Length: 153
Image 1: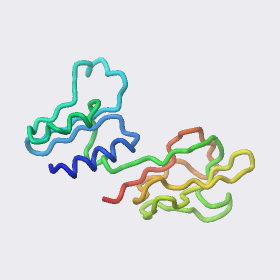
Image 2 (image 1 turned 30 degrees about the vertical axis):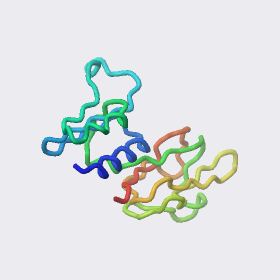
Image 3 (image 1 turned 180 degrees about the vertical axis):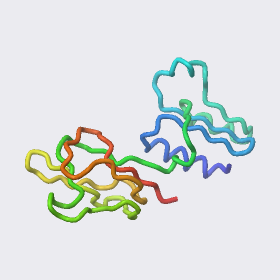
């Protein structure tokens, strides 16, 4: 795996809601984590790069990361406030986005009504909508996952 690809994975991981990730490609192994306290069964694990040419990346990795590499490009769009979720620009309008739709960073993906104010929620990423996790009219909490988006590579 080349240095630029590893840097890209590290950037995506930092911006994601993933807490751990493991990547193995031939002799190359990369483990990262955002966990602040180790799980009991993982207490003695550390971040390891087995390819000596990539040893200079160690300062970039603070913790161990375990997960499915195919999910490395998935990100969550989360609610910035408590309120009522609407998929359209108003409670009775067509949905802003659909599963499989490509969106750009800044595009409106839904509305959250809070205290009779309609708040447009913009996508923080450019990519394709993979999942919509809440239904119209659902009451949602702060930082609740609303959608999953696959980043454009």
